[in-house]
View (spheres, rainbow, N blue to C red):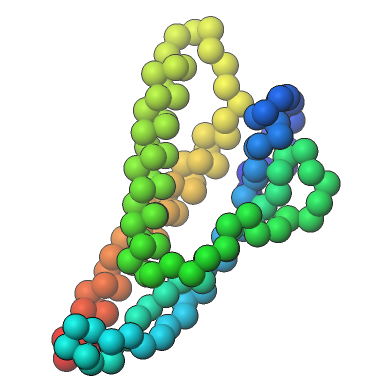
Length: 138
């Protein structure tokens, strides 16, 4: 979550009513067995995924606004799509902020830190796939 010392920004209307802040993401590995096309039991890795947060105008405690069980490969796909869409949004924001008259309240240092951390963790996750492949083929 962002630094609480940042200035408070007020929005209204449908944006204010819909704006949701994610305060936590819980991913838990769970597994089961499935049968493949050769009728053999194979391990099926799954992610129990919950996005926890709250609406900006709500005084309620944070709660799950998404909860579901995903296949591990679908979790990786969603991660890739989130990164792609974030990059596309930043491309658009960069185009909008060209020029001296546009001011923003983004904590770009925090965003950079989150992106660096995500890059490091994604590289680590990719390297783990080699170990998983090696164990599976052995």
